[in-house]
Image 1 (cartoon, one colour):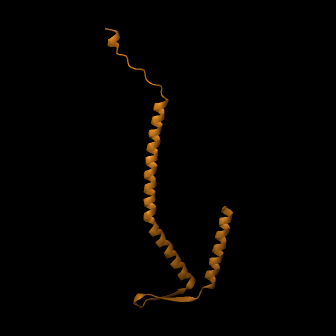
Image 2 (cartoon, rainbow, N blue to C red):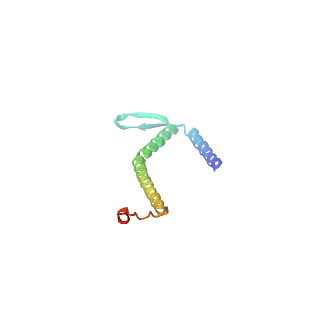
Length: 108
């Protein structure tokens, strides 16, 4: 499986690298307040992709932490239930204790 995934990664890298080499035309981006920037198309696409990845990661961060907290809470509850179950099993496997004898009744 590792070989297949690495082969796919190499093929994708070569495809994107070839695309970048073919798109070296200069592109001018016009920003607000008259600011302009001229860069190769491949570089602009790479920056836009990286920005999208970072924004996606930032958008997912709160839900990831929420799920981790919930998983930890459930793990602690499961551990407590397992300990409680072990105590119950130990109580069931122990022989019953004899009734206590009041020696004052038999030996006045």
